[in-house]
Amino acid sequence: DTGVSQNPRHKITKRGQNVTFRCDPISEHNRLYWYRQTLGQGPEFLTYFQNEAQLEKSRLLSDRFSAERPKGSFSTLEIQRTEQGDSAMYLCASSGGGTGETQYFGPGTRLLVL
Amino acid sequence: AQSVTQLGSHVSVSEGALVLLRCNYSSSVPPYLFWYVQYPNQGLQLLLKYTTGATLVKGINGFEAEFKKSETSFHLTKPSAHMSDAAEYFCAVTADFNKFYFGSGTKLNVKP
Image (cartoon, rainbow over all chains, first blue to last red; front, side, top):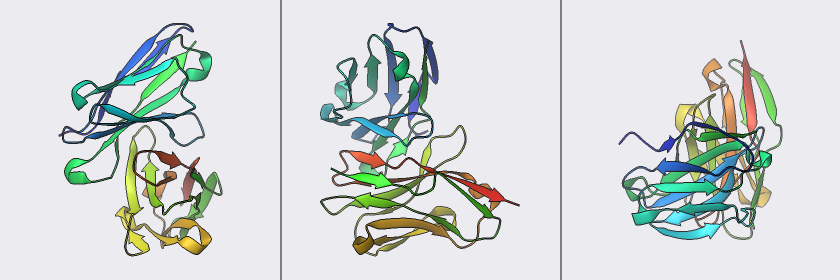
């Protein structure tokens, strides 16, 4: 397994457009996390899946954000009606299986909203 | 609720000097604590973690950290800095592995 992958790596969009990001976790991992990281800050928790169930969602996450993990494999994060404040790095991490509780992070998707 | 405070957004040390990066946490339940490193244009990588057992934990690249419950601290140390240690370091806490809270990070600069 080559680790957690995220696509696209970069996304530029205009304000008001919808965007969708994809995360492919390490195949044996049942836990999947989404974070947002802005310049000069640490990762900010957005949401958590155990298999296909979304068990935690940050209260900071507005209704414009939605995440899915169908069949407990890959996950998508959608942002509707993007705003300039959504510009950030979106990180995905996974854990579980033989690696235990250690989170493995993907390289992130950098979003720029113009 | 939990939170993490990392004192010092930038730390500069000379090569060969002691590295000390500070992390204090707030948690109403026994915490699990982590240190991650992020090199430029790379993803976060786990350095070390405290879950249960020994309070002094050793990680990769010669780093170690000690969980001090009385001080609510989990400071990261390395006896002798190397140029390759220059990166950004993040401390994180969780109570249940469902939700993680990260500090704002400390950028370590190593001077030759």
